[in-house]
Amino acid sequence: MNEAKKTRGCLITVEGIDGAGKSTQVERLVVLLAERGHLVVGTREPGATALGRELRRMVLGRELELARDAELFLFLADRAEHLATVIKPALASGAIVLCDRFMDSTVAYQSHGRQNDLERVRRWDADSRRGIAPDLTLLLDCPIELGAERRQRESDRYQALDREFHERVRRGFLEQAAAEPARIRRIDGSRDLAIVSAEVAGVTLTWLAEHGFASPQASS
Image (cartoon, rainbow, N blue to C red; front, side, top):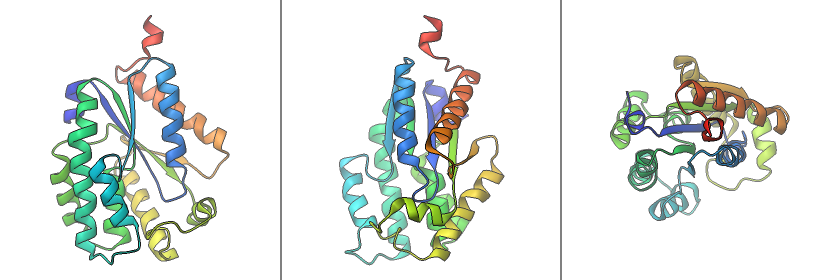
């Protein structure tokens, strides 16, 4: 049992390639759950803390040329700070934490995309998380061409990388979903926004009800 479950809060992460619609779905879920009376915290990686915003500028900007390990350690530094100052306190208060990207992005981008050793990336990521892991992960999957079309412009160093990189990243997400079907729920993100949002909401609400997080409104 991970530390999040012990505190009675839960951690739900939303993952996928750039342009899959993660941020939109996190924003919609925050509103939906808050309207149903849940204590909910929406957050993201990288960039949810003061340190994270500086690290986000460094790792996603194009001003610096970073070695692969340096890039990985910056993401993990962001995660350690994010956990200490945002996620763990929210879980301790009993909140549902909705996070736009988390550990599965580290594996998909830093191991599969950047072609770093998988076991080393997993080991360092685990060290940064100190026992915290998502209770539920929603993987929004779509073809990389659609993700690029939705982005419309290349705004950071990752979005500017070639097709092969993004194909490797997508495969990395799909491999993780296949390996952990109980935690990671793949959702076809290529469909109409309303359809995707309805499935995201349905999967989330069903999971919450099944794991003892029924809507406070339902019991009032």
